[in-house]
Figure 1 (cartoon, rainbow, N blue to C red):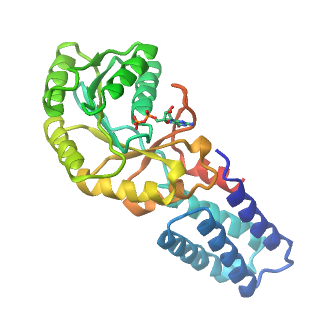
Figure 2: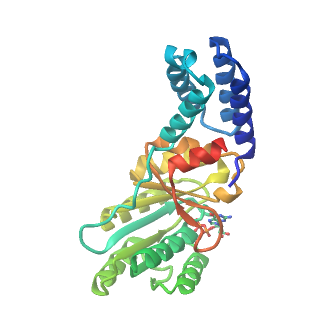
Figure 3: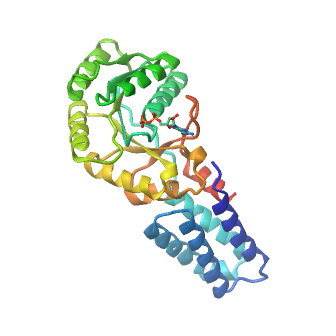
Length: 297
Ligand code: GDP
């Protein structure tokens, strides 16, 4: 990931401020304007930008900041802190069930990276916790989806519970969960269907799967490269499903950063992981503070 444009613009604004022997209210206004434009250009949600700039301005206007030593440096710190807060302050861990199995439901639009992310997550759990995950193939609309899940699963040696495409997905999940309990799998990862757009029928199906499976975690997978569309998608899924976390995929190809900076603020839901490549090892825990540092460069 490289939010080059954003990083460069923010750095420029800060550099300008640093060169001033003393920072006036007018300088501060100018810096705030530059930050606002940089964020808007990065495709950050409009009201998020407004709110962000207001918060930074309030903190920076404090007499101590402008009159104190190194006002520019203090403002950089305020921007850094507020960026971190915007993205959720701290990394949020995966929810775990008190008794195995922990049930994780993957949801998202087709092509967002749901199946790949399911694989990455299982791979991660295997490596980090010596876990024994199992997948449930609950996307019955595209035969290729089941084949793809099987391929991913084979590559990391994780079993798949599948029943083809002629069985009701809720029934598949029911049977899959029974099997996982019998086999003492500690994680069950349900790969659900996705569509090109959010539609009623898909949402109803996901709601029914949720009711039956009572997942500990509903991970919404969204494509970072789609910017504000990713944010709108997240809102749509969250309204119906009350998701517990977001995975932002394709951050490696995202040059702007708007989704990463807006999703938490708009939905209130934490980004738990980010995908930064197609390989199974390319899934990282999302750390808001590290992301803020990357953005500020
Ligand atoms: P699904 O339809 O939501 O299950 O999406 P897939 O898992 O099939 O992913 C769609 C495409 O996105 C595939 O070609 C994946 O390899 C690719 N993909 C998924 N996650 C990432 C990521 O983090 N970075 C990149 N560059 N590609 C990804």
